[in-house]
Length: 440
Image (tube, rainbow, N blue to C red; front, top):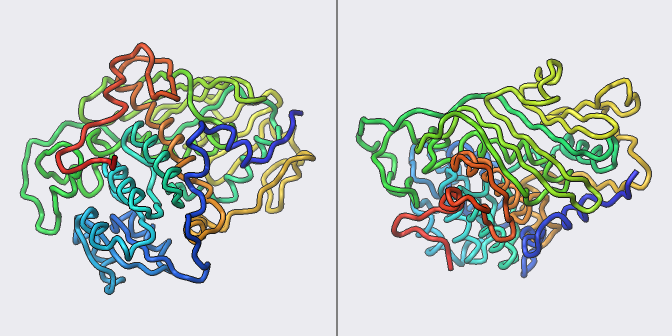
């Protein structure tokens, strides 16, 4: 059995210099826990309304949305909050009145909204994935650390008890050193061609603001309010949509950071729409006393290797950890040790797990939104700060880069460089439309 190291310490070791948990750290000026934050929300329909519910106990001073119909419920619930369509104007006009910002826009505006808020010293919560491009994720993590603001990525499941228990099982060496890991999800959304019709923009939608930094194109309901996820200009496909959720446990438990090699396969690459299925293989080096690892992500297609066995494939979405002493099968709600007869005292139960002696167990989360609010007021760091969520998003989006480039490549994480793969370079970052930028 290897030496047991507390989870937080292992996490810190796994992150590159400058991208540590400072990105979710304590603000320079602490507030009383009883003093309410002045919160502004960018994007308040759909997922944004759920995030708004998470902070509704604070003082909601401003709401911003480009779609008045989608924002209607939020606007009605908070009649005293100032209403905006353009978050740039909101932050400029209300700079002194805003302490913290919640970003729940489509992927393509995550970075511009979050970066502007943090550059002004605002604490920031952002929906997953953290950004639309690999470069943006690195930029946001570095900016969060520089500004010392409290941040949280919207991976709500990270705070669930199931996540904590699976991490404990892996970190305590229950199934031994892990060299293979398989993650798969169902669904085959994506694909399609650009619409030829050009219907008028609905009067309730500010289309130019919805486009934000993305290239200009005519409005079509295929993009808004939801289909944007499966268009490269706006979304990151099923990988970006669900990858941060399903790769989160492995990323934390196995102390992952930068892969050293990435390869992907899927249907023929479409210049505009995301694939209906995708398989990505990441290779990681040894990490301290942890051995090299191959991680395979699959969506829209059955898992490969040992994960393709009939019993395992019945799980529509799951991660299989293959250790030297056994296997652990888990999704976001449940887990199982295999073969079951080998672990009679370590099967799912209501009480604490009887883990190996010497393992340091962390206290349970105070809940996802509450973590961020407490950190904004000077409390403990969050569990998913941008210093953690940024590298996780980089990993997820690198799968898209390898697929779209059509080539496998060694990855230089320190310098954000796909080695000997010039086709990947333009896919790591993007150009912004005039009037949209990241702060210098």
